[in-house]
Length: 573
Image 1 (spheres, one colour):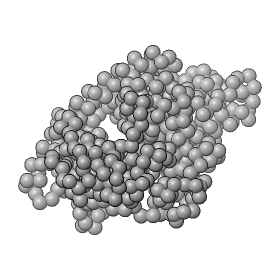
Image 2: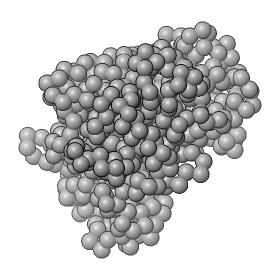
Image 3: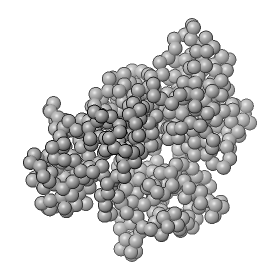
Image 4: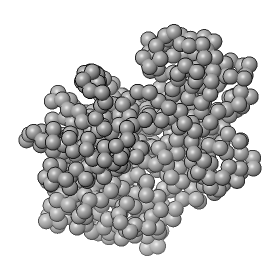
């Protein structure tokens, strides 16, 4: 798909942040809406106070009572990275605070489905818990909570997903996205929500004199898990989330992190001392997620809980193996999907506004990644389906800015009551279930609703640029400043710049990547550049002059650091 480079809109006045800030960084922050130097303060003292998290105090009271009475507490998580880090954090912190009977359960996506379902309650009942704490799920689990209540099990839901029209009847509900919630950081991930509940619990235990005979845990010890879960769930990096991610990265770089995170970074071949948010998102998280996609997320949770590095390495090796298998399955599915779409393109002038893909050989655990890959290529909302049970199919949706996919599903459900058996999610991602024979009905409604939402306009893939960099500023020092200026991620994207370059040298790596030496227009020095997976997009030979959108990168080789441009897009100048 053709892409257009556009300059980012400046959302805050430039030059009013820090007098000693590099002009390029000043411009970058201004385009991300940063209004003051306070928003760049990533110290723990700048975190939102625990009192603002509605429901946190009530949840803390219930957990305190269970701890006093020696009751059995069962943590029920989700089968993704946010769920795994949330589960590990909850177990580790509760045990450190003195809870004696704490266990966990994570649903198998192929047997129990997502969330606190009646099926997972049936499994949970075998452990005879007095209190269930959900992490990263539960806000829509009306039937599951009812099943727990019928067995006399109290339920605390901690979640961050958008609620449905009916809330479950729980003992306590903590979710910053509930209507009327006063917690400002609506993008807090599931791991962040349970962290705030645990902060409230520790404060309550302190008031009650609980730590007079016990050591009081340092909640900073869990910031590595918070950073990993927050980045992995691709939630917008509001100021509060940036603090949590930054502080977690500081701990990981200094080696003060869970052995499991160290082992996963080793398995991915990443340098722990230089780890960035992107390493968590693209190296660590996929390995943890592979367990939930193909096997059982308990492997990932046990890796995070491991206290011994050799044990963690064994589990990380298994997760790495699963990730290789996941990639093999994904590649096969993507080739099938793209072959289908290429045929469609030959028959139709335009693709549908919403792409709806299904094959009865596809794997439930990989359709989310498949939808994401196809969405990136064709720049439109994509829903990929795989076979479920009893004549149903399960879908995973990924969307683009401007199309709130959960709202789209809401509208489809209203237009055709009963079409969707289940659905839920966020603006950019959602899950759903429907009967297989109604797929064409769903496909037509999806296209109609997305088309209406866009007002009949088509899609245009846009690369937002932070402008051009003067040749004299294109150096290693600025690359270091940009790397340190994050953490970058969803809603606070890593800076992308653009400019014209003369191609001095060009060669292909593995027949799919470009390795270039370029010279910026108006400059004299030569710069290395790499374009991953761009050979198919820009086949050889390249033109003499290119317009490139790129990110500043630091290439470490044999102890030396060099500036390298990481090309996001290139075309003839």
